Image (cartoon, helix red, strand yellow):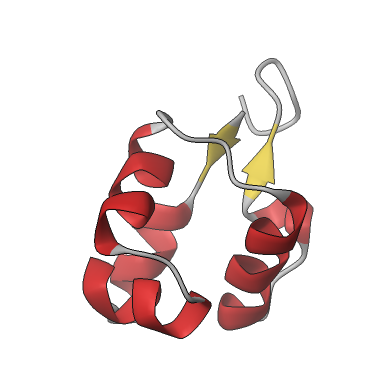
Length: 68
């Protein structure tokens, strides 16, 4: 699964720590999601999308999907 979390976080002016606090996880979890080392649960992915006020498909997509 690929994502735009790092890009969106920078665009919205969040540090990893600030985003982590907003969605209820650790900074390390945000870093792992950004690197693609951790696939978030559906609930966590929805929290991330809600924080950026974007649709799921605008933040996360499968390899070989429309964003590649």
